[in-house]
Length: 275
Image 1: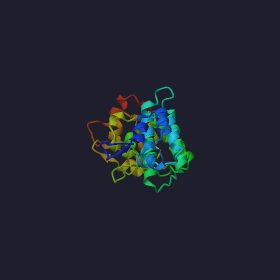
Image 2: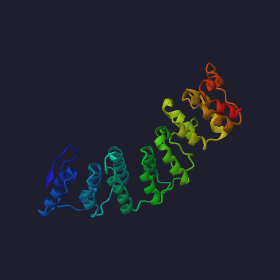
Image 3: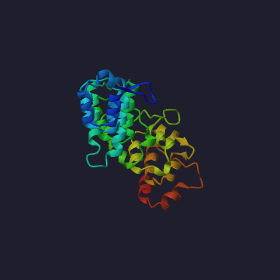
Image 4: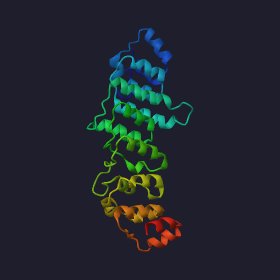
């Protein structure tokens, strides 16, 4: 039994039932002879529909047919739905389960040379889903040189993500905006984010992975690294950048004299420590 729809000439009725997410109706139609097979499930992205609706019973039933799965789309859909539902009681657990089930059934190889698989790691990090990164690690993901979008990983809630990646060997050397101006993680963070939203913990963490060349060579529309840290009022981190550089980095905006601002900020102790 087929229905016409706006995407194709015919869509099997069974797919409409799956998209509706009612497992009992699905079983009734199958009992009355409506066909469901691996090809129908694979060709119509039925697993994606079940993930989008969050219908766990439907998902498990369809997985029994061992269909081909659009891995990237299905896992990304589960992650998006998880972020929407995680505040509800037990609202996000089923999406975590679906992700692990898909990875297990498809025997995903997280080869660091596979761009699509590396994209999944970046998306999980961007969405701040530690549980998914842990699942990826369980199935052999290589986090060493994973590509990260630091402009989205700004707030303090991302610190556990950074710490997990660090524990699993991440070098923080592959920012998504990898060009001459954003060659380091810290430069990428400053270059691509709203400076007023920068959080101390994240900046402090990424300073560990910044070289002398990174802090001396950094420059953007807001000035050098000292200008940027002054704007975001991270005065006590300025001393750390000076220690990495081995010298004072004067701001390019001389109207904001650095030591005057530092004194007014009440971060006297960090100034004394540096001097």
